[in-house]
Length: 495
Image (cartoon, rainbow, N blue to C red):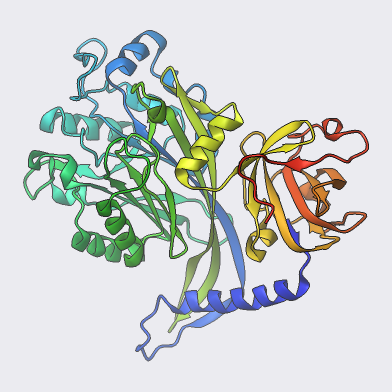
């Protein structure tokens, strides 16, 4: 849904056209005598979706539980969300070697891990498509553990990155293709590179020319890797295993330096693991850095190690046909990133959606994504306050997932009949208009994406608009005469 600012929309279209034109030309050598010719000046778009989750441990208490409950047990309460993407990425925090008959169970409390090879198939059944092996436990069972893990994953077609029998193997770019929905286009190629910080592993865990191990963080090598990867992929994801364990406040300097270097070199997304707790999200030069996604399937007992998230990243790409001399190629360029955060909690080794506003808000607070718990009539809701024109025009239209009891509150500078019109929506919504005193003045229920291009206006001037997923709030609970009051005694700032 977009706001009806016609002048701004025209300006935006012109700006996007200029940016898109630049993105087509930017891939070519500016000193070349051959000037690329745009064959098809009408861009065609496709949105892909990537899921990112945290650390997965198939050992210790989790292993013992799976031997009783089955290897699919950890994923039972989250499988729908994992499958809701083109590609799902996770960090596998243990080698896979042996099985329930021949394997030696890791005792409680140990930090030397092993997981059963049968767990690999459960990972794939859950909808996970690729795992990082660049972590501080991947060589816990020596070279045999790495060999077994690689062979097991390869045998079932589960992609991996970040570890190998030598440095070249560990450093290798992994590409997963997403079929194009536009006829005549090549698949969208998503590349993955994973790195392990040298300060979390001994040198025997480093991959070398003749030594198995994990791909170690090195900015010079990172820059070379990204430069080599960029011509081969349309989207490039960097995974980083680094940070101070159990520190939620901020990433450390090594995480920040490496992540920024990755974006500067040309990566599109950086995803971090290792601290076992959530850490803040950074938007750096228009691209997202998730310094730590925390645990996903783990047995640590402390409250902050049981907070988790699923990042559902939607990426809008634009296709153009470009001619160089006599050769015509398809070019996919990224137009925008639209992330959804699904707050999770780990209960009995099973990640699942949070069930209370307090749990959800606590996670957003750690990630430093502003949310406020507000009272609307007799109900409470978690809101994201939106004040910029760009965010107001986008609204919920770029999202596939909305956490329970959440909404988006638009804060305008001037009271007027602020109109809402539907475009690119994925789900029906409810719309509420409020005046300057937070009195509910009008509402539009169950607005369906099929109503586009219908525009919805309130009956009188308002200053605030609240949008929620259809059915999130009971209209009767707001008061029968629609005079509910929006208040927040804790964090909401009317100014």
